[in-house]
Image 1 (tube, helix red, strand yellow):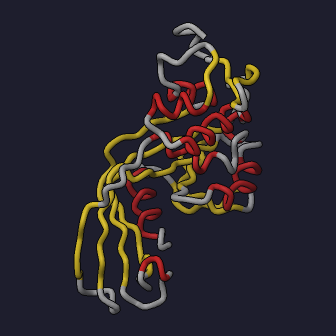
Image 2 (cartoon, helix red, strand yellow):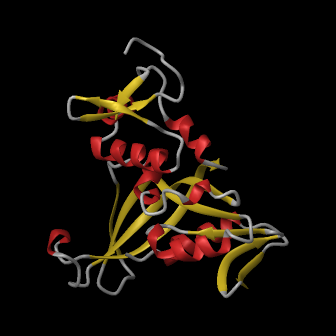
Length: 226
């Protein structure tokens, strides 16, 4: 998937006067350097920069910036990439909890003292080109580019404890990932990624089982009867 336009646009939106762009630090090219802070923009695939972040965070404050498309438009262009054939809004809506789809690749990284995470909720366009090279599921259309339209919100997590704010109120003192999924209107698989990451970060504890389901101790306290 073409991510270059989105990556470059987020980097430009995020940078301020006085920042250094694409600067080499400890053998790595860092997107934005703001004084002592190293800022890395990653639109997808956290596993691709896992080793880089682990190395840099040993000696520098590092902030990982990740955009999530809260609203997205699908644009189709002809084979030359010049003529727009259609544009429609996708029914899918991104949300802050989608960050756990990427955090599963680096669940312990945010526990590092120098590490922080910033999630940008954005409006974006996915551009498909009629080049006959895409998958059969897309009827041979390829994803040509992804473009930033607007940044509508930003949330910073300075440590694993900040992520606990995403756990909804009203859960029992011991809850399962399915109960959390229902409370958040998430798919069960998404809630499982969330509980997995929080457990690996050391801020969510297992509390036995209820049948075959793992229970977790509610970090907000017991809000209702177990």
